[in-house]
Length: 348
Image (tube, rainbow, N blue to C red; front, side, top):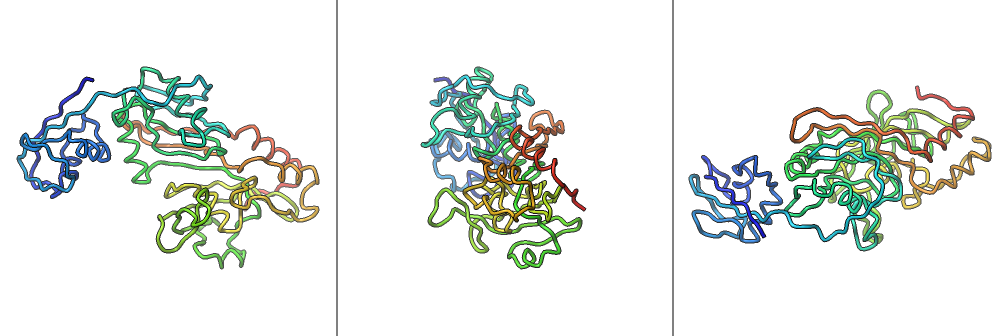
């Protein structure tokens, strides 16, 4: 197996720990993330003044000579599969996909094949220059199996490192469209009493909680106010449906990107997503609020009505500002058309 060697000198006043010092001083063109550097230290691929160091907390000093030996990208153990993809944008460093409902992003014990990664390995082929030492696409964010819409995936280490940094800093623009039960409104006394819920100017609902894996159901996330991970979701009502209004089309955007974040936050607010069986998104509708056929279609919708509609970020290599929009998938579009045939009230 071939290797490449990276040599550099630690600069002035380095951080006390080896891993932090390497993250600060490693040449940018090496395209090594802090996570990757941590693995290289553990694997014995780092020397200080010619001595192998495997403790990430090892003390360092300015002027020390660092040598990192990096194995060239190996072939992935995940098999490529010729699965059609809706490609929105692609260049040498990244690819943006409009993911369909039913496709898992990454192989897992319950979904070993038929995933987006399997499809990308076939689509990209030799264009993958290696992410984390492996010829594989770099997944920097995910959307749920039955959520549709836009995903950006890295094809190179440089892109993976740059995109991951943007997601970590919450500078990526992400807007979702979703259909929920009820209508979030600042004048609703029930919603004003929900812990974690508040309203901003323009009747924008803000949900601020902690999220963590549910204690008894490992497939779900739970709202917490101590422990867990900080999560902020905002939602604006775009359209109301029914007489009286019983459903709303929302535009949601994220300050953070936690597992199931929109789904669990809207459920906690009492406005579960249509079709979301995991978080209680199948409810009775007020009698006669909608035509019977429309109400039946709402009850029968087979997945959470959630679509990642907008994705914007800075190209991690060229610095260009990129912004993409994906139209609603056919099932959600058909459901909205059915709702609009009846009385629909635009949001104030």
